[in-house]
Length: 444
View 1 (cartoon, rainbow, N blue to C red):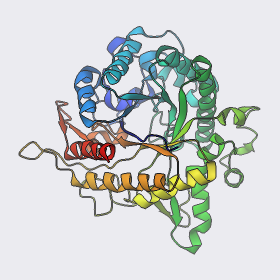
View 2: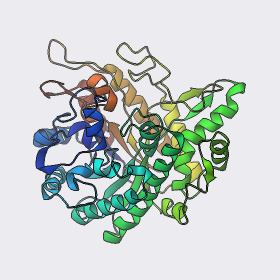
View 3: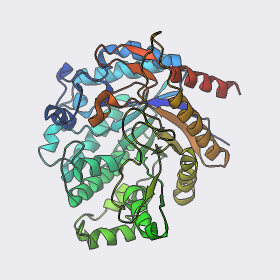
View 4: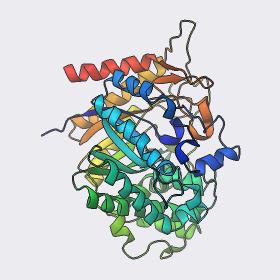
């Protein structure tokens, strides 16, 4: 029997909440990164969601969505990462969850969207195994508090980004560099996913738990790039999907990392006894975050650079992030996940397009390019579902224009325009289009 299809939108705490110093909230690695001048815009305010909660809840209700995917800020709940619990922080999320339920919207809660407590970072962050236990405790606290009202939980969002952009390239918080540092951080993120999943189920056995993994489906530029493409797929996709589904780390990538000096002791210095079993703790669904595909050239197997120009004036076929528009790639990747890993359920947990269209003289945001992108990718998602891939939901990224990490407000993914100065909200044409698309699917 086919499961009901869930229509939703997504956000993350650091990108929208603001209220950095409210209610005793602690400092996160992204707060520190912002203080160092690495984030344009004001992360202390972001989209001011904390202070505009009721307005945003009403906008969510106006979409007619069935679920809202949001993340909770670890530092709002446990300010120093592993110490005292903040009642004020829990109260904010209680208001959010209660407000969603009052509007018949299912909360879909992501525990970690890259905003590690700075106090834990000062002790080694994700390069320290102690952070694994701190995360599992945080997960347990959240389920003990909200497990009766939140049925679907995501442990981590995009561990590749957190580990590689934050620990190999240094362009995301915490700003560290080094291959081995990134691989250690990524491994500990995955172990914490498994440990937290088990801890959460001990508290509430009837919840659904998964992880959201970003992907970059790829193809070789020509015959000379076939080997490079295989490596890229391992580095960008299989390195995280394989261990989560009990396959361990892909042997060809382990061998390549060792030969290149990225892993000085192979897996022996990385994986402790029992780690791979923990990572492979069964999950109820996997989230797939999809935006684009890439063409890999020989010698480009360790890069994930945009293929188009970044910024306003994106040429046809690209978004302003420089990402190629390729809805067929989504259908193909969903089928691949089904064929290779056989998850019980798949959710498209992020999909969307950055285009900077703003209000015109009438105050209307006519974001036709976003509508075209969403229409084609929703069709691609449903095409996979119709071919018996267990795709059970689709979440637009994102509900609001937000602080797009190191891009600030220069990259806008939202269905709702947010003025960078006043934080005024204006639903875009895509907001109304998505509302009507949901209504049409329910009536059809």
